[in-house]
Image 1 (cartoon, rainbow over the protein chains, first blue to last red):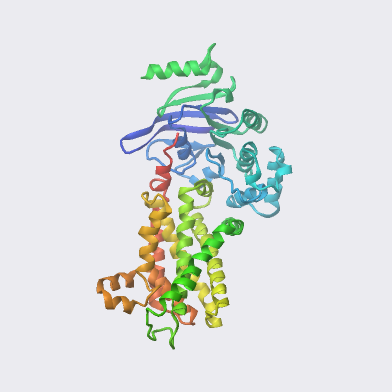
Image 2 (spheres, chains in turn red, purple):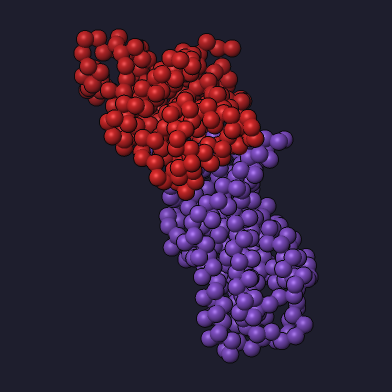
Length: 241
Length: 266
């Protein structure tokens, strides 16, 4: 077993001669919150597609909770919960139906599925909306439903690809708070992609990705020093050009 | 094994629930063949003389002749729509959700296919019921015997849609699919006219029609509706299913195909 929740080694990926990710190497300790910070086009979504095995690459290695994604894809997928950037709820179905569909995709059914759905709804304060159609939820609650769903099968690691895009500031803060709490209370490993620095706390792990390369990896406070992350980031990227 | 069946059941249930929730889609799926049956066929019946060919044992009116072809059309549209909506609309997200399940990918795609086919069968029976209400009635046993054939033909056309959705990028909208897949498949088939009519006009076109999987699907449905098994047509449909399914599996292989191209976001 690895101490790492997530371990990436020398990951490269591209379309033809156009590299999207270049030798990406970093690891995230079990139970920590890691923010993956980068502007649009930095390669965050490509990295998420690799991590969730929507695509594969012949170079490099990905370990999810100690399991090699290439060698044992299904065991590794079973360990992860995913919140995609694009909303993936069935808008015509109720919150509960959305969750039970997902549970079934993970092989859960009957009472066990019901019990877990109740627990997940409770954890994300969604119990009173269980019967509401997803279409009738606001953006913040839709996202929360997706997070509740991603936790149904007790994953060890949670991937979130810019989960607050399009949300109002209050919902954004609430979701960020929720996921930080999950990390602190349940020991969940979290990889949170964002281009908004106010979602990152000083004690969080921070990976800065730009044009497919990791520019820095440390705690946010150490990377920033006495300046703001944005300032540091702008300096790094201007130095790179 | 139970995990597999749990997922299959859920995927079918989801597809059926969504279908029920989207009434517009259901109505559109019924109006299309009914326009052909009640308008086109009415105007066309006098222009086309039909001789007695198997499986018919007597003269049939043109409306009766085109019913199997329209059943095929319902399934063809459904197969294309369910797969294409998957690629080009919001449905892409739900495909991601499906593909990141820890079950084997071939099983997930197969389950998706079964679910789409189940919906297409519901549409076909609704169409047959309305046709019967207008007096176009098949032998009763035909309605039952056609079920396994509809399962096969529905799977074949769904697999075609899935293969297209994963491999062909140029078909950016439904109009493209109409022009390059649905219309050629439909008009180069025995759906609207018996193939011997086509042979009179052009041998080349006749040969294309004869190998068209859609022709074979329509003939399999036509014979089943009259209680007969058209074995060559069934075999050809099965073969086409195998080929399309193979292409779909290659297309959805994570090392290539659709998901790779779609990953090029931020």
